[in-house]
Length: 148
Length: 326
Image (cartoon, rainbow over all chains, first blue to last red; front, side, top):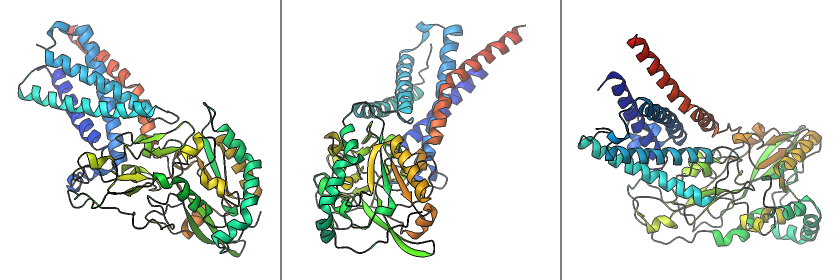
């Protein structure tokens, strides 16, 4: 793996870790299950902290996705070389970005979303996250790459 | 400056007898009624309430009217409660203490705080109706992980008791710790009652069902002293500022947490009032509150330029590779 590719990989891995952890931190589970009691992990139970970390990680992820997408279009190996698991993860990531951005808009002042839309967004975002984490674990263990 | 009324101990019922007729006529002829008729408009400015602390006599009519108007929304928990795992999860049961009116509980969404303060050398007791502030950008609504809370276009925020799992996040992110939990009720009982959830959170919903019918909230309608006024936020702010100028008073709620839909006007500075009231569990403070959602809003703006950062990185990469080729 070239240096640029390695850097990209690690940025993605670190971002995915923090965005997932802070995302789960939006639910009141880390305190309940003693995880936030572990020294150094108290921030997991501070909702405004996890909220800011989640947004910050989302900014990095969106920038990374834009970079990779354009790099692939202008300089990439071609769509045919993307693996099936690669396409699947791209689809899930796209869904996460779209639902996430809509939730960010929902959280802005003077922004009123229909209640049903909010519930659907919350559940879709959570479901897509679980699917992405499961798929990422599978592709990591089976050493399946994004492109052939 | 108008001298604030000194609170007197008046029998709730006795007071009601003498003032109900007058209160009814005031409601029918003042801006309250006008506000009620405008509540049904589809597109409208968020509604706010003005609470003129000087007028409150602490009779608790609003408290009992709130309880009567919202009784059908109160929890009827199933007992015994499911065993919680892990055991640190607190059982919060107010079902045997429904009569409590000196703090916020799942069965009491409005209470009266008392402050003994000195004004112009005179010791007076001020009484302050306290309930949900109905923030303009409410963290409880925006940060609920399940969408169990909703904010309506008329500015009120409320908890959907059919969806709430009682995780209490709304209370933790509320600058005033307003929502209160009742264990043993709600959706969590049908999911994983031992492992996730812990009941339902409750708070003032500003009588949304009454507003939908064009009526004003019960606490406003019943108040014999017209302590509260409801109307479009800009009008309420205008009135509040005029009143504050008139009495050389102070305003609370206009800027707290980025702005709320509950505006208090007091003849006494709020930091002084805050020191005089009893605060603690179910008893909100009157401190200054920064905009809790402001950091998130700033980052949301940064999110808009995130794609540009990605493009910039790509341009940098092309520039470096072109330079290396040369």
